[in-house]
Length: 326
Image 1: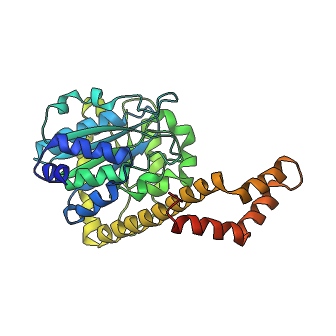
Image 2: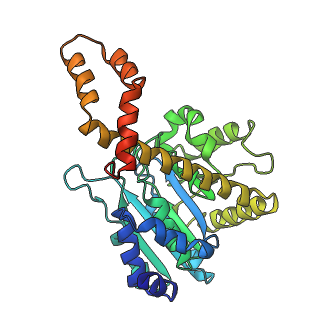
Image 3: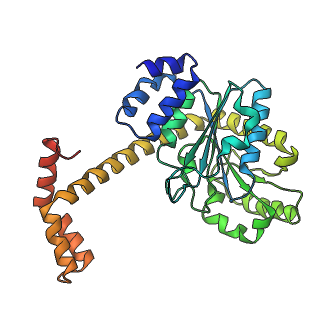
């Protein structure tokens, strides 16, 4: 495909167009990604998640400046909350990072969550792969900051930063159920504000309990991204985590786990979509639906009866074989 060849030759416009195809979930995207599989794996993915308003975008900006100073190329995927009207991204992170926009070695793309409960749209994996294949040394994925449930980043990133602020100190215990488990590095941003020292101490007491990996003790770093304080130390910790992960063989194994999980999710999503399309056409589904509407059968019993109705599945399978299911 011409676009792929152009992207591999360094054409930024081709990369942008391929990312658009991925975001549109065009049918040719799986074949495009398959053609790029030998070009994947060099880029290192850093996930940045945490509380809304925690200064994640400023942190991304400062880290990008450090990476570029060391000669690394950078891809940035900035995930924004979706507009409830257009479905598009609201915040426009590219406007916040204007100093990098003219840098040919930095590629920034804003994406909308599209209502994803895990904080990331389903197409973000494909976009990250395209940036990787295009030759980016580091790919930073900044999540939308929608709350404690945005854990999808652990399915993609090699190193995960969880960004908190002193204002969130009273809710730190709730991290045990989610973000605490996925953090490779804790960042207490806006550390010049009251309560930051206490938050650092609270986090340190938590991370000293048993962690995911015996080879890595999660650091807790006070940072003032807006003032460029502590960002160099953060970069050093990212590099240390990468080195430790590579040395222990966990980088290869975790990426294998990511691929397996992606495969399972793709199959599940496609099966769900195909079955839902069949439901819209199925007379048997309509029969059970009428029973529910007429209060003849409860929803749970009707669903169980439908799923145990072999004729329903025979009908679905016949549609698939005849090519009418898509």
